[in-house]
Image (cartoon, rainbow, N blue to C red; front, side, top):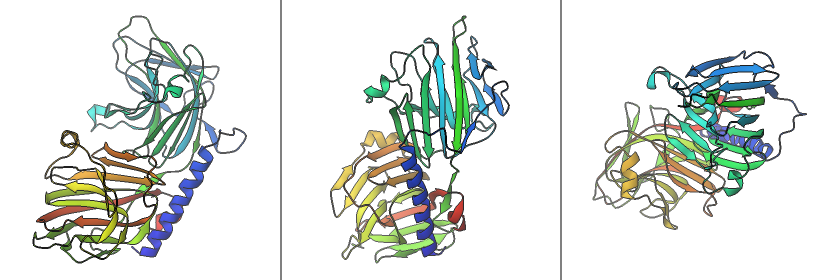
Length: 410
């Protein structure tokens, strides 16, 4: 992998994302091209029903879903998958019925016998009023509720048509309800999947109804994971004095003795600004971390910058700034115990876009900064902490980039 090619294509990907987000901040212009209806006025061609046995029909441009007592959650799903997109629709729902629209969702035999799972844009007529929030159906539950967003909670109007807008680009999912900003989620578990209209399960004998109209979508392409480590060599990376880095069977292995005072760093040749990167790690001994937006410095620490913490038991997924603020976000032992798997492979994802930084470990958000004053660019690095017996392993180091265009040459 050529270093200049990586830097060039990352820059292209970021420019594309920046353009899309800039457009996303404005109201959708139905007079411009790119919009497509998800159905016609008379037939549900291109859809399939999954889950329960709720009754779906279409008439005069309105899709109606009617609940059926005792059947599981039902979903009317597009046969086509979508990655990055802008979606708009109007919805009206009975006050007794909870509903939602699945996006980037999945149904595979290997997961709960085909149970529909994935991101759901909530339709919630209850007093809780979380319409527009993001729920992870049949998986992690609430990812972005609206308990701290009072304007959004007031936006949905019961008994009337409500307009939704959803913008999904990369690991960002944003929603609006009747023009009011609702969810603003950063999560990269799924980058593509189907769209599904939910009729929630109910115990009521009397059917409840949810209706949709004006479902249209603007396809913005797709993002895919590209390797930053070729699995064979340390090409594209260089080491600083302290410790030892080797590649064994597709795994980067770092070791160091406790007599070594210097932090051993494996540093990227390239400089990155905005990115979403994920990797798998296994901490056998000692204290490690994934550095980003860091600069090389003289001395035993090797670099200054942000570190997403990696260790054998404590603080995993927290944010530490070497040469700066020290601990910025430090998870508790009880929090770490819920998501970290000691002596096993764990997945860490770091999203850094502008001044917003989000860290996930095994799908759980462990740290988030929404307006961080720190560095906006720098190198990546894997750490071996000095003066500790160190043994840590990394693999599948990847960056999320647009599928089309120059990024395909990576």
